Length: 156
Image 1 (spheres, rainbow, N blue to C red):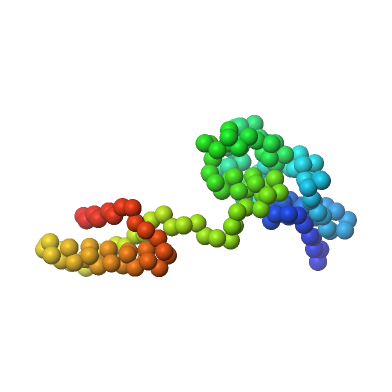
Image 2: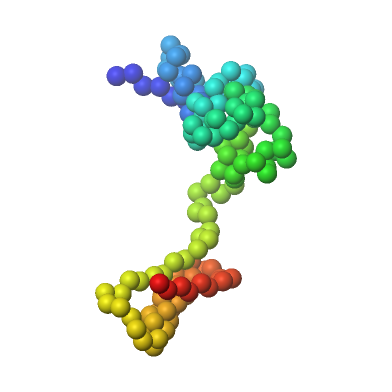
């Protein structure tokens, strides 16, 4: 069984290093600050871990074919055109660890809903159901230490 080991300063660069390790006689490969640009220069952008088909296609419309071209992109040019996820990949390819990559992103929305087994014809029943749902949503807010900026109630 063949084993390969890629090592670098970020997980994304380690995956690139692993690509080269598979072709190395020793099965080991390291990308460091001194050789990073050279190895990314011809590395296809679609082979970068975290760059899917749609993102690769988008980058190619901008003239970016390789990871080397990607890391040279101007952040200000890229910013209004892409997501924070792609920026994190870019930073990792530049050798910068993403900030708090282990922390979860904050929740954007809490949903509490229900379906009734029978038609609701009395407003009091609907009001009580909405109050229960609001109470459940408030409990979820408290559990995650969040605050609320808007509440939406709807019925069909």
